[in-house]
Length: 276
Image (cartoon, one colour):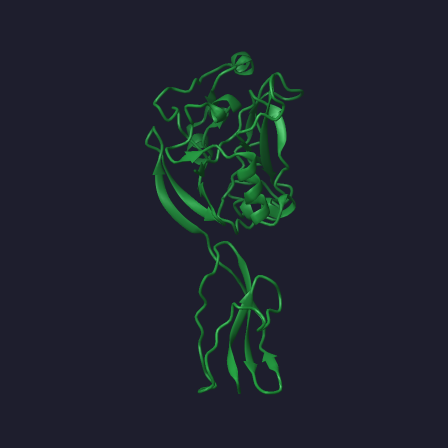
């Protein structure tokens, strides 16, 4: 016997050609190994190996997924407290934003009727169905003007995510086509059935907060989609000038993360802040 231990990696059937392996010597046939340097929110494949002069034999392959790194808390100007989660090299607030003020203490406009909401050209927020319980669980719905105001709606040290921030998150989770399932809270406590593909393996814990749709859009107005869709503003003017901002969304129907799209700036979406 030349060496023995365990080898692991992020693909099936890892081999001793990888540097991520242990070497437990040759003295005993029984041994245990400790793995170091594992990334959070990542699935690994591991198997034992033993090498002699003839070659290397491998044991049964096992897989496991590391957990999220939950840190925090961080507090906004209103005193709302948020935990944070590390996903790759990014740190995200673990819940949607709830503040009623910008970082400098300025109040964000609220209590707008349908016509006022649709005509807004400055920051505003609403609470889905004007329900305190909705606010407690899902946070507030902000228009794009509030999400991107230079006074900053996020707590100190955080900001509304950019397109680049959001794309990095999606790519780390395997791409837009599958990232949504890894971001959605699992089960049917908040999401309606079938909540396809939801594992929340990233720890992002996306909830179906719905949105406020203004009467400038075609179709239904008012508060829609709670239980079915979670949508998030991005700090980007999708069509510079008159009307559209960038957002992305998740649905109860599939495990994708919506490609970055445009919506009227007076739509009310959630904000999930990211650390600077």
